[in-house]
Length: 116
Image (cartoon, rainbow, N blue to C red; front, side, top):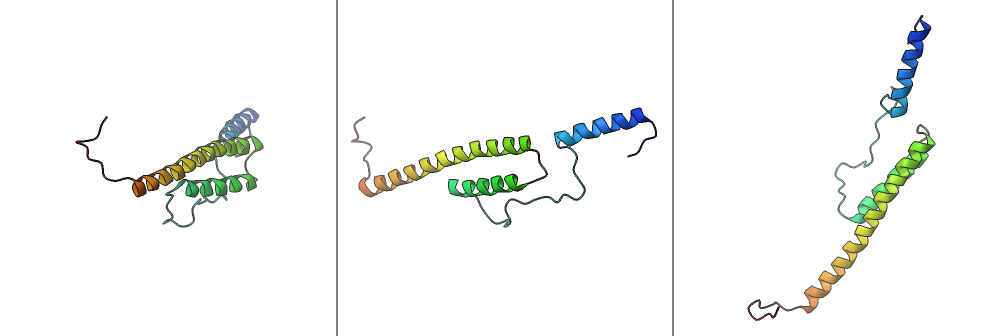
């Protein structure tokens, strides 16, 4: 927006740049991105979340409109979330194996005769 007064122009530019750095302004040409193309896709296991996080990290790393610092922060956060999902996935697998073994080998308990 052109201003004749230099001070008004500087003030406007400073305010706009602050908003731009904060990520509150968008270019009119930007289109919203969808992370999951199929709306019926459900994230049910840790593997599903890891696949989604992997695709988002790939998309963020290929995005040229964000700065290096923003990219590093985003990827670092997503890696932390991915590590937690990976940990949860291994626990989920171990628990399912233990449950299967217990179901295969255990007989029904008689709570009246069980010794505590």
